[in-house]
Length: 90
Image 1: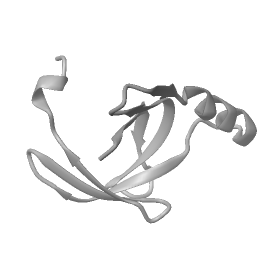
Image 2 (image 1 turned 30 degrees about the horizontal axis):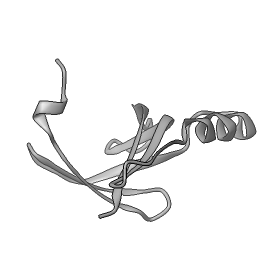
Image 3 (image 1 turned 60 degrees about the vertical axis):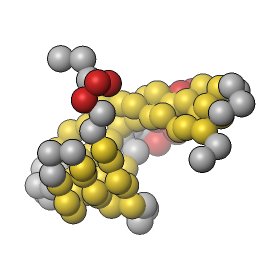
């Protein structure tokens, strides 16, 4: 790849679909391997103001194991998430 996209925020369980998480993103960054970084967090704030809510979509888990989670997003995206135990601070 040519870089990394990182997003962060909060999640809550859907009240209607047990395996669905509702996402509210408030942090975003695009970093290239060339050392260029772009903070896109402001885009989430603008979107929340226009929409009247920080919640921006959902992710429904279709497979889960100790080290892997596969899910689909509300716009048809496929997510394959792996756990990096060294990146988590208890």
